[in-house]
Length: 196
Image 1 (cartoon, helix red, strand yellow):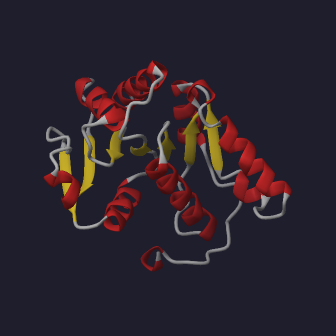
Image 2 (image 1 turned 45 degrees about the horizontal axis):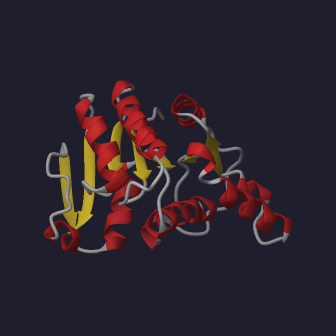
Image 3 (image 1 turned 90 degrees about the horizontal axis):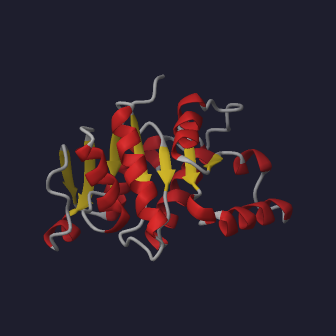
């Protein structure tokens, strides 16, 4: 099935390193250039706003999904191609997962980590079979990757599940990995999508 949309998880802050915003801009422009829609959390702030604005500026499609409570605080990116306002954070994550053909994490905080690990857990449980990747901007995720290797060595994560997470250092490498990714083997289906 050809890839047509990518969900991006990233910070609602821009961070102190300008390389993070630069990578978000590059990714947004590249998505638009390849005809891939951006699916994201609907915010106009931080790296979220940077990637959305860059996608729109390059003529791309942007689908924002934001909870009503955050939209009321006027942090929604109002010029999204499609802005969907939902009731809860759980609805937001489920809808973003359903609308996306792949998932990418850029630098971010708790929310980014929450979204990344939930979508990886859903892959592990067989709820979806879509690629999940990190854009390791300036080594941002290197300590996290070391922790994942540690939990494998401690017997708390199977290597085949560790390999569900793709890692790229550049935007072109990232998009190539997403577009060419195929599941290594069928995973045991523990939970159906409607049971998540």
